[in-house]
Length: 469
Ligand code: GLN
Image (cartoon, rainbow, N blue to C red; front, side):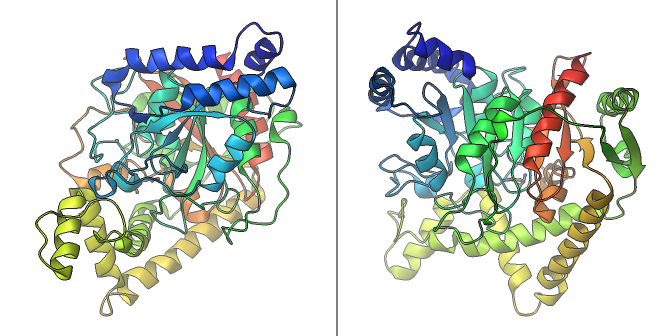
């Protein structure tokens, strides 16, 4: 990012030229299906930023071309959550994250494909079809922010903004060999994100460098009158200080390293990195996390319940798609929803409604809430003794397109390592640490304490360097 900005200052390039280059890359990679739309106004906006640069009035993100996941509202631009039910819907206001990025003169080049309503781990539930992984086009890019991760991976933008409910920034970043940061719940405003599960959703950056992740987080984070869950915790200038200090205490979850479901090369990678950290003077120890078998069921019960409530608003009246076959009010609701939502979204609305229903509420929803608390408390207890927790981001590298679509449970299990931080509401980052023998990216996840993003970013920068040696 700093290179681009110094080139701009010395008039070696312009924002228009940089944007044109990305537009060309998007065209050349159209077959990857990463974008649902490239915004028409982008060169006009680039011109405006060039004018500001000439006047010396540009913001922190001048020259930075971003893509946004297609569930983030940008005023006067379409947004669809990759669903037929929002087809043709135009945002009437911008999300806080978009407002803040634009205020610092970022260029938003387009909206990226994702799983429908961010429900998925492979980008295959999108109404607009799957996205292909640029490392191997027979593989999924991960999900749900799959298009955003591929856009960064294949150089179609400088960085992207995704959303993460249970891994949707981190797991696609892992599958595509880029960096993905899910902030603490309450660090970044959710205002103007299309809600999936409101007690989990967070927006965050997908980038190629830690510096970029730090700067983007810094711009997006902080109190917002429109989201009461954003904490009144000062936002440090994350990107200004990325030097690690002292030796760290790091835990790795023994259940994760020993699980038979984890790819052998990923296990080796984790062991090698643990050795490197130890050799560099850090304390790295196994800890037991006895809730490993419960994280996925707890996550899915709670998020489906929240989704069933959040998605009640798509009724064929307020937004987007209305069934042409409807004859009265009731059939407008029924037909618009039946025709507008895809299979996975319907499954979740129905299961969510079931776990919230009077007869089953205590058995499922209330119980899952209690287990969420236990998972959070145990995770925080580990983090009171250790600076970081290290796990693989996902149990395997990118899988084949089509491979996991027949069995939703298999797909849900792809989230086993990402949902812990989501349930606990704490920050986590996925870091690309090499490729497997088939050239597919492998990644590790680092988790830390609530609002510990500054330390997480410092450690990540150091760890990425260390992993190269
Ligand atoms: N794969 C998870 C799910 O389908 C995570 C999705 C997300 O974080 N939006 O719920």
